[in-house]
Image 1 (cartoon, rainbow, N blue to C red):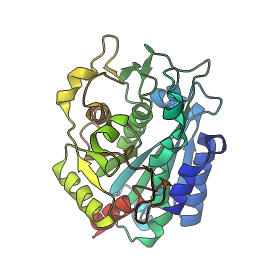
Image 2 (image 1 turned 135 degrees about the horizontal axis):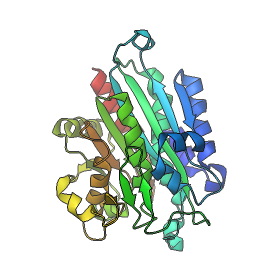
Image 3 (image 1 turned 180 degrees about the horizontal axis):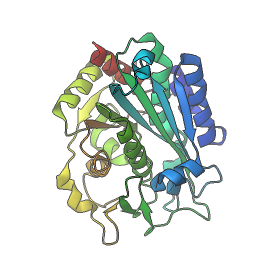
Amino acid sequence: MCLTRDLAWTPGQDLVPEQLAQRAVDVADATGATARVLRAAQLERLGLGCLLAVGRGSPNPPCLVVLERGDPVARRKRGARVPTVVLAGKGVTFDTGGLAIKPRDGMLRMKYDMSGAAAVIGVFAALPALELPFRVVGLLACAENMPGSRAMKPGDVLRAMDGTTVEVTNTDAEGRLVLADALCYARRFQPEAVVDIATLTGAARIALGSHAAGLFTPDDALAGQLLAASRTSGERLWRLPVGDEYAAELKSDTADVVNFAHGEGGASLAASFLMRFVRGLPWAHLDIAPVAWSQADRGFEGRGPNGYGVRLLLDWLSARAS
């Protein structure tokens, strides 16, 4: 948790996407996990057009970090399918809003917009303490959302890794874009469960205040597991709706879907956008925007970034192992 907090405290100038990726690699090297960093050329070949577009306005290119830790014996069995859980983290190292630039006060803490990715790194730092009979994969979608001369524009149409076309209606709704490609990439592992964690929407903060993160999943069993882990860890979750009923509000005239729709239920709309890219896999989305930064000292959580999600995810993984 201290590692996760330190990462979120780090000024954006000192933790651009490549540096965040290197911190993840360092943790993997220290804990016996494997790490790969997919940089711009590889992302182009794989077709991760949404992640690339978010990072286009910055001189610091985006990347996707793939962390893996699992049973090495099972992995050596030729042709064996290894049970897998995927954790995907939003790693926007600084979010200006892009061309839809944030107001000054709204931008002040945006160095913490990679708190989801930081939580996944924190989990991997602790994994050696757990005996897990399955593989854990961490995906960190890292980018810097800047209003540079090549930045994505409202009206641009992006193509995600699975071929879905996305009309950009708000360049400040970038987190769901980077996660869309990460969730597409997650499908290649044929996971038994996927959980993404992200400081995704201000709407979640409006709905829940600063004492609970939003939990979105159509899977009641997975919701029950995560809510149980929430009670054990003390990191509070509150389940909010997600589903196809929101799809009508995300329709585009020029693409398959828009990345942002005006109106009520913004956190559920964002989660429903993400759900499109998991294609029926057991999946949950944790919107930690309300809780990843504490406004004041609270119990054992100091003011500022608090490492939310590390305890929760570790307790959930432990419960699955038992």
